[in-house]
Image 1 (cartoon, rainbow, N blue to C red):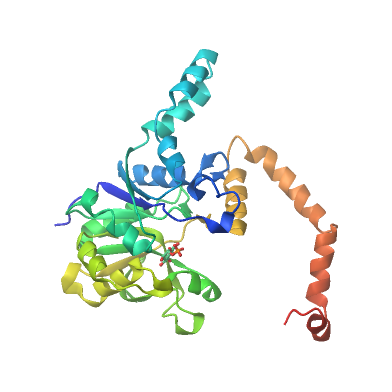
Image 2 (cartoon, rainbow, N blue to C red):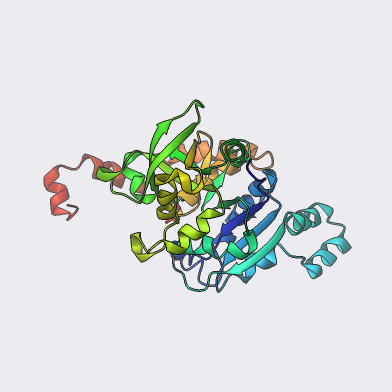
Length: 322
Ligand code: G1P
């Protein structure tokens, strides 16, 4: 019988170098996606799946994360005085959202190392790990399905997404076998960030995991892998290779909406995608976007792109693009 999962671990110690200088003095997890910091979507997702106990693995420069989920007495008093109950509610909502805990990673030795830092807090129970760069649309619940599969199979469960084979080098990739459930696969092997040619499939691990506590012992023994870091994927590969250890590894294949906020272009796309669906912003944003997009055809930037696309090979060589 699988123990019920009650705890979520959110690694949030990354430096956010892709967003410099915005992240020079501010954690990347605090970047707003529409009007909420990216990290709040992730905590809300954990809570929606019934996980109210949230441990964040942070680092230096991350105090804003703790402040965001804590009382802001002066701000609350000022909003209350003005009778601005709507905004006061928003402020209080993030304070009361979850039972928040924090531990620092110390040395940045990789995702596997960050998860290992959760050991004391998690103890001897299965737990979820949610990575902050991925936002899963609240209308397409993924984590609750993963928890269901974990409870049925008492195994390790990861979220998988079919990606363009050209992008598989950005993810952990899985070799899989089908099961009797359409959205569940058994994972027979995992490789961290393989090149396209050596990838076992185009099924990528997206940042959601439900792990059994045995993973901690495995992580302790896991040598640094890709990029010289202790990789969670490598520990999961050990668990996939030996079913006796902790019941094997399964994947839930996700087909819903997922937004990547990990790099600048995807971050911009995520904001637009989420904002057009919002009742308070969508009705004004949609027609504006249409007009803006149609106007793009006439801008100089678009002409440059067209010229580049229609350039002859000798043109591009001359331009030094090869
Ligand atoms: C991490 C994991 C990788 C996973 C990815 C999902 O990589 O190591 O296996 O596919 O998250 O977002 P990162 O993106 O932190 O480099």
